Length: 352
Image (cartoon, rainbow, N blue to C red; front, top):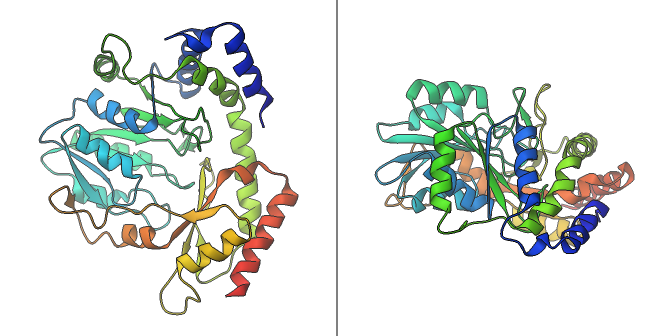
């Protein structure tokens, strides 16, 4: 429950802005996103998924081009590349961060490569300074998907601002949520202009509504404090949930980095010596009332007709088979609840 969201809804009803095509709430959200990201241009969208496509179109990417992305990623990113007529190039992830492996990206860049699509996933942070250097050296652009990491800091900069264009999501489960919605952020005027031209078709074809913008504003104000609380609770939880050989968490980012926990990832190792499968673990942990579910299916089995694969993608395939994810709402609870959560996870682990 968020009184600020309630007040925003009532205010939008009272002033009639809830029914307008465009109004002061969208303008205010655009301004605040630009200020919080220290960036010049923001374009609001109907979802983070369409925002990825808009970002690619803003970069002028289309038929015959290639876009490098992780073989373990959100399904919509693969489809967005296809939607603009480009070809996905699958490379492996880093086994510690669940994000793009820089050396794998280097091997994946080819003559037709126009962009790298990099996501910050499950509390992990991609190595953006290294990826930026690589992209600049090869003359390719970066689309930085920060949909799971609003407000996170990567090498001293806000997630989404290392790329030529960054992507945000305001979907119904996200840390900043309006049920649906998204945005692109960029300092490139040409990217912003192409995005605007693609979206405007007499009116905005992929809009964020005034009502959605209204409820995002109070959440954006509270985001830094909430991210701090989530990070503290993750540290407390993992301090009590470690040392198991077959259930291992994603490592907490190094000092100087600040994760933003939309999901918290573990791997259920299912090889020799593992007492259970991922499905068995999920069945028992969910019975304890813990909001843990499976991760993404990944793209390791995609047909060569649809994409180019680089290497054996072993880490991506393991992530698709082994990852389980804790949903974020519990991470804003008091320490006593986090301790209960740790006890529930430990109880389940000890039961196998």
